[in-house]
Length: 184
Length: 191
Image (tube, rainbow over all chains, first blue to last red; front, side, top):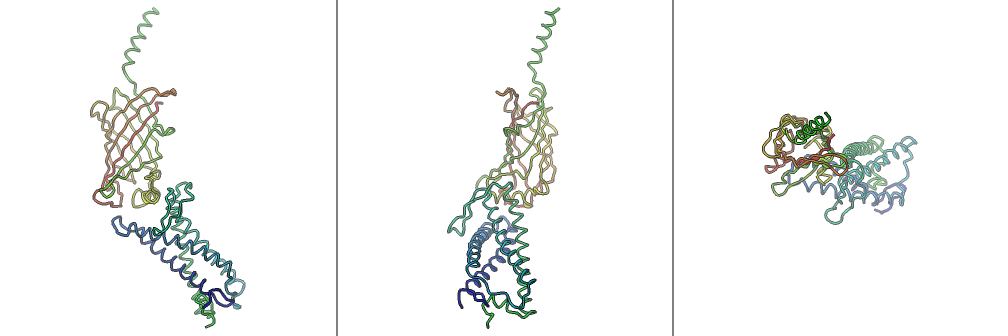
């Protein structure tokens, strides 16, 4: 399979970025939900949040690459069967997903760095605190992070359902393209 | 006639001078010469210190009649600071102080019992995390007098130990951390 997108299919780069991103988003959501319920004496009490933050930062880097790639390699052309309304909803939905992911990551970052402490990514490198002057920063960022995460996961779920709808009901190549199999 | 009046006045003042008057003080929030600190054991291996940064209070105090003293403090529970954003966020949440539901904690003294020269036990009602219980603060009078800027001040230190469970604090931090010590130091400006 080729790295670049074609007019009918996504290429390997986009495919990897998309599915790794999806795995990370849903994985982080589940991990986040589970870790806040942990008891003080659980052996995961400190480990789980460290993993959550580390993957979150790596996801941020992945999303930056993804944004860059999106501008360097345009995606496949919209399907002929997709009218103006669908194209608009698509752009809106995808745009909201991008915004949502970045907003969740930013708010998460602002929780942990509110006191000036950096975030360590698996002990490989540290991300310094850049903004610490928001009043009640860790609390406000915490609420935003929690609510947006739910919103994002619900939206992503709808996104997945929409893909399945296109595949099974409309019987068009939308989902196949995201596997690079639209010409199969 | 004038001499008698002056003598009476002089005698009267001399009598009064030996007696401090009961006075009302406002805890010095403007200069923040007041601290409500807490310490709790971490796993039995070290002390974890924190402070409540935002509180107001008043006290009335008479060195000659300490048992007539009164104290009243209201603090904003969200103002806690233990120098760690993630921990502070957790402390403000439902596992601990639930500050969204209980934004203030208050202490109102109900009686003061002298326990020695300059020390007293102050009994009062502490409302924390929505629960009101009587507590006793072991207090020590540190001093009083004029300040260089035209005011008059008096200061105290006090401490008490609270059981987390007594105030419905849900999180169990282990056997070494069932209680938290409050260590208080306040200076009041006489009104």
